[in-house]
Length: 130
Image (cartoon, rainbow, N blue to C red; front, side, top):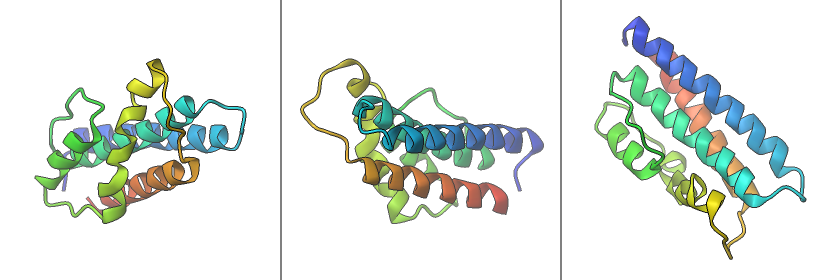
């Protein structure tokens, strides 16, 4: 069981993850919307979901956008991370690089939304169970 302070931070992170997921879904449905913006919000939903799990696990949340590093921290807790969530690391470049640099690679929007949904649903379950 986490402390009330940790639970509060976890709930805050979950709310932000859900907001980013909602934005990613809405933006992804518009073909004219730039992939960088959609990818950014999908990555952010995953990042904040992972940070919610860290918070409820009473692990200090680092100032990073690196999903791989956040997953490594989660792996150090007693929380089991499903494969669908382990696989979100491909969204890492969309956090910063794709927002400021040109890219030749388009975003697979359905996969980005699916990754974000998996991360947010998993984090919601973990926080509820703690």
